[in-house]
Length: 355
Image (cartoon, rainbow, N blue to C red; front, side, top):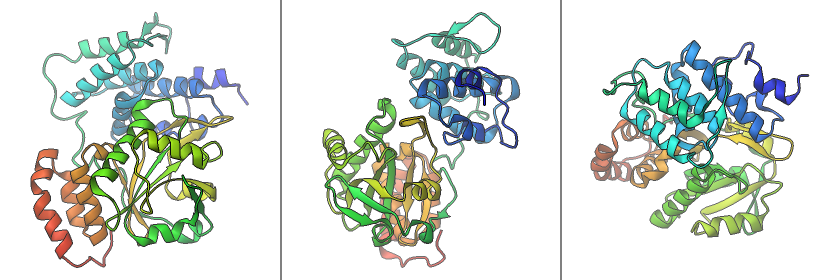
């Protein structure tokens, strides 16, 4: 087997894997790497899109890196990937500018080929300078369904029946009955995450949602740690309290006391592990109905709690078309439609056809 340095410095060739799938945090070529090594490999994969073209199904991953990454090499690669787009919208431009500012104090030289190395911020500046003055209206623009990260899929109860979770108070429960009780908003994090734009922001927004909505009878909130061996109940409790999380029967931070591989597999989690802990992970958010059908949601929905609450209400009522309407509408239109949609969800019987 090639050593770690060979794995992230050599050209990436993954037989049988789509180019977009190469970016998935749980891809085999990230297994066992340190965080630094995984970032170098991810940066090289992204930079390769400048030459090969960015697949449509990799556009969301590109935006997510620009939105959250703190790694100069990843952001340099992402800046190169943007150059492959025919046109770039205002959001992508703004993400490039924000990314450059985010690494101002940690910038470093990055080399992907034989050309003289540039710093990550210089790579971003070169991309921005090549975009011209007028934003495009097609390529690089987020699709209308961008707030949905996956088609609805079933969480297999036979695979999850042995899963036991332990919450921030040390209470243990079987997972399946918790999910069958009512619609659940399920998020993932870990306390050792060093990127404030990922786990810490997700949990702060989740805490805001719990305080705002009260969760309770309307929906459950379950936040799973990726790092159950390290994240003891005491650590989970301290992490939640530091971010204003109000714990209760319907709002918990949990680790898997047993069955974590089944949870990881059933939710199709995009998380990779080095020798001791997580090396890379995506932000992940799901709406799970009592029927154990899950819908992957764009984590940025946590920044729009009114719309997210309506999505959860529609999921509870089994209203697929209502969910699609909410997730397709621009933010201002979703807010305007909220009252009418919420009233329809509460008054209408559930749609037995499911998702």
